[in-house]
Image 1 (tube, helix red, strand yellow):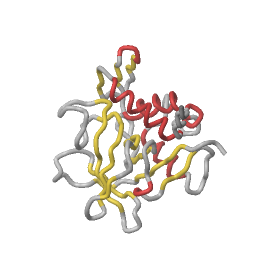
Image 2 (image 1 turned 60 degrees about the vertical axis):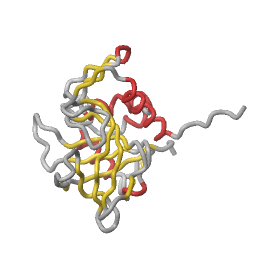
Image 3 (image 1 turned 180 degrees about the horizontal axis):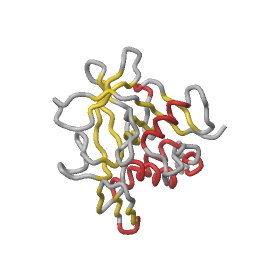
Image 4 (image 1 turned 45 degrees about the vertical axis):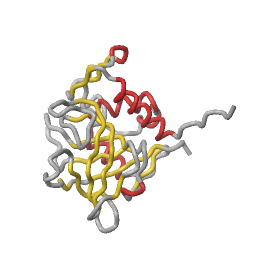
Length: 206
């Protein structure tokens, strides 16, 4: 019998996120975590979901992601700052993915809002579920795992529900192929929002 192939680190992370999506019994988007694994309850925001998955699948890779002194964990904008900084300030165990077409299952994608304000979301962070699908006019459909207040396109979450699930986010790239804007949720006629976007990939420690 052939031995089972060992999953890559990004695949392990994606598998952990997918397991939660497929096995949860109750979920809701909220900023205070209420997670009961035995009962399948996952009530958290995107930061809480990211932390939970990374702490389980890659705890040593979670440690270098910065957080504000007043916060219990990194917020979404910190993931963007961290992934973006990898271009000029490499960190063992992480790699910046510059072009959206090069993103793969298990990579993480984050964007940040221009202003970080008390009591407001700072951006969003997701796990990429599959290789981005190229469509027309520099647009890619990217299936993700995340916790969101609103379902994405072709989402596992029912309309009007929130929390952890999986769906497609549409992203536009610039002339070089770097992600520059996103379409978060239906309707398909809704406009793209341009915000700084960065992608990070976990890798073995050097």
